Image 1 (cartoon, rainbow, N blue to C red):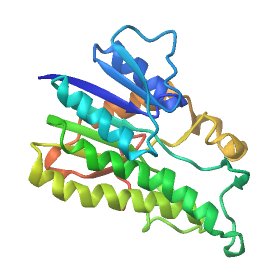
Image 2 (cartoon, helix red, strand yellow):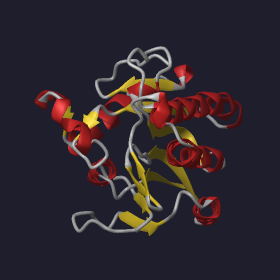
Image 3 (cartoon, rainbow, N blue to C red):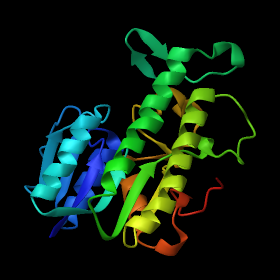
Image 4 (cartoon, one colour):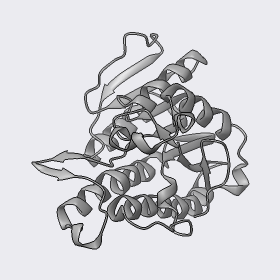
Length: 242
């Protein structure tokens, strides 16, 4: 059985950088995004596929395709996430106070930041290779014990829920798969569209390029111990409290 790597959300800045670095290291990579767009710099070992992670049937069909072709997943990185944007005419932006909470925004945060990654957790369990690693981009603001500033209710809560999904799934993965390592990863503030409205208060040395963030992620996950799974670490390899 051959092994492959998946980058879920490959059209974003971090996703594109991960695909390039994994392919450069000789891995066969599936670059998954809603558009299925292929970067011209990617080698032939990269297979770009259009896939909507909000459609569970599409995820299930893709996993069955891997199985039918005798493939197992050695690494999957889920970069899906939302902090701000416009959804069906509703402007989404982090809340600063309780009065700004609304059901539409909360539902959107949980749909993108929690439910979509959770669906991948559900389906990947049947196709992971021995000693596989599954990474989900989280955020330090999703740490319950580290929350001292408040605000950003929906984003914080949806990332905290993602962390709990991963932490809970790790118990079941330990029973059902052989040596799978689950990771929640805080990438820091990366120079992408997700962080753009918030960059003015970030020190230049703390605003990272996607290539740097991808390199840090791949470097640090290679050092993690499976028996300590799940892990919650940041871009510097340091432990983040749950």
